[in-house]
Picture 1 (cartoon, one colour):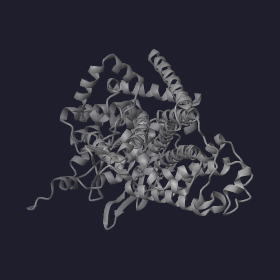
Picture 2: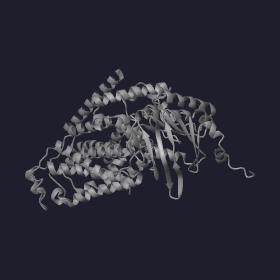
Picture 3: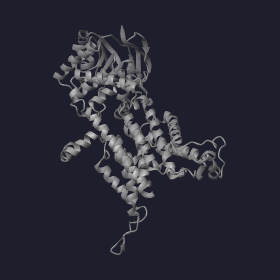
Picture 4: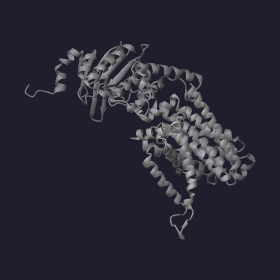
Length: 261
Length: 357
């Protein structure tokens, strides 16, 4: 059963076609990677899925936990998040001046049923919801070893921890589908290895489906069940890691053409 | 838990002490001091309201004067005793639909706040799609529109003549209670999940949206809450002055509150309270600069009416230069910090010094 399916989504900015008729599907519990050289349109594809951009044409379909097929094309990012799609960003977008704890607590806001009056007056219904949210955030932060750092400002964390926190914050929204935009950017090989293990671990622990953009080929090849390759907005290849590694078009896109050939 | 109890106890003691002070001011001080204290508290209410949109949600909105005018006029129109109304509305008779509606001050304040919130909703729907300077200009414009509508709706607002004979609110204790309630409600709001959502929008709109926070809903909500308290503050202001006049609510009035929240710290509730006291009292006590001054038989030429504003501006510039984030920044006064400070006053300063580097 697929969780996410895009039907030929195209994004055009003026005369530039950033993504051309992208058709992907991501099945439940899979880890799927989207790779491609810089400017290939990977982040644009993410932005279309999460509602930041409305595709020029094509539709995005999402299947929720109950198995309902939902057309999420051009929905508001906040509504898409509420349906169970969480994401991280290529250039970390934490709430910098807020604490680690607050960063993660904010992700619980979308599950809040109490209205602002009940929240302001701290009525029992709201307090109960809040206590539950607090307990779940505490559990989450402890499980990823960020509990000791909960009162630190997000911007005070070292770079690797910030990346980590961004994923944790996305997890706190209790997603079904997690989109990771270059989670290993700027990490050294050891950190990348840890991240690989972490992604696998959360996939299994929270029963997630993961769709990620990444440039670290070690990570991509090791972790992905399937890979899509974009170049100048076109899908030039798709398949399992083995076949992608040997695909001539992919090699050409990354390394360029040999003039003598 | 014990810490929580201790803090609550300290808060209650502080409230009782402050109420005692308010009572003392009311009974023992002259009208001038009472006026300044009242003004401080009303400005604190409006500063707090402005801090919601500007400090916590991070939206640069400058409509406070307009929302104050709404609150003040509701109080003005409905609290003047029915018998006195023909005397007030001597140029254009009052609209018969409202001429017999009388409200006590408390009800009028709430109605004024709600009306301001409703107007904020109507304005906010188109305007809150704007960002930064554009939002500031649009809200400023709407604030002027409110004032101009009031100036021209003579049969309701008595137009440019203003409304006189509003039963004056001359009790420091009542205004103190209103300020206290506002302070508590806003503190509770900011410490709730909604407050966190507001801060998330301030920090990063795109990330907030990706975390499921509906930007438009939350911005509009904050704008309405802000307008509500501005309306209450405006109503108290009208009642304090005893008259309302469209010229009281020129857009320049908004800058007073901008000053208060910038000085106190954008995104700090206690900072706004502090800012309100400093700005209001500062403007009063700098009046020495407005008086002519003679030194060694020579009149110092600068000391003339208006010079205090120059001095005030200079002080502000220093403040902005050295405390770029205002006095409190986004920090709050807490009892924990206060107790720590009392225990180790010196450590506090050295730590602060190290922190600044």
